[in-house]
Image (cartoon, rainbow, N blue to C red; front, side, top):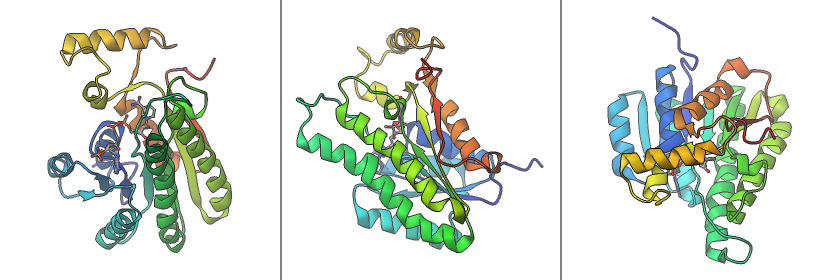
Length: 257
Ligand SMILES: NC(=O)c1ccc[n+]([C@@H]2O[C@H](COP(=O)([O-])OP(=O)(O)OC[C@H]3O[C@@H](n4cnc5c(N)ncnc54)[C@H](OP(=O)(O)O)[C@@H]3O)[C@@H](O)[C@H]2O)c1
C-alpha cells in the first residue's frame, strides 16, 4: 500500500464545499489525511463528505461569525484529537472601485477574506503549540501581489492576507509552525458560471469564454482548481519543511512580468 504524503495528518479546510477548497479536500483524502471542511451550503457539504467516506467530515460554518469559527475548531479537535494543517481558503470576490464599493461590500469582503483568516489561525495556534507544531496555508491571490481593476476591496483583502502570512510566519517560526500562502491566478471554478461570468451556462459558451480569458495569460490558459490544490499539498506536507512566510504564485506566470 502506498504511503500518502499526508498520512496520519488531520487537516481543517475552510470553504470546502466547492472550487479550490473541494479539490483540496479530495486531494488531501487521497494523500491519507483525515479532513474536516467547512462552508455554508449544507447539501453540498454533506454530499461531498458522503462521497469521500469516513475520513471526511463536513462542519457547517459561517466564517464571518466568530462563534461559528470557535465551534468548528472545537468540533474538529474533539473529533480527531488534533489539527495538523489549516487551509484558510474560504473567500469571496467582490467588485467595485474606490467610488463604487459600498461600505457593506467593503466590510463583508474584509470580514471573510481577512478577519476570518486571522480568527481561524488564532484559534488553531494553541493546538499546534500543544502538539509541537503545525502548518497554515492561506489562499491569497495574484491580486494580493499586484493590483487589479474594479476589485478594490478584494485586492486590499488579499494584500492583507499576504502580509498576515509573512508576519505570522515570523512570529511562529521558532515554534515549528509554518505559515505560507498560495496566490492563484484565474482558476476556473463552477462559481464563475453561477456568478454569470459567461453569457450563458452552455458548455460551448463556457469553453469559448475560458479560451478568451486564457489567451491573455502567459501560459495561454486559465488554471484548474486541482492545480492549486497540488500547490497547497506541497506547502502542507513535509516536502516544504524549510519553507515559511512564502507566497507561491499558482498563476501560469501572470505575476512574473
Ligand atoms: N478561482 C479563482 O480564480 C481564484 C483566484 C485567486 C484566489 N482565489 C481564492 O480561492 C478561494 C476559493 O475560491 P474559489 O475560486 O474556489 O471559489 P468558490 O467555489 O466560490 O469557493 C469559495 C468557498 O468559500 C466558502 N465561503 C464563502 N463564504 C463563506 C462564509 N461566510 N463562511 C464559510 N464559507 C464561506 C464557500 O462555501 P459556501 O458558499 O458553501 O459557504 C466556498 O466553499 C477564495 O479565497 C478566493 O479568493 C480564487
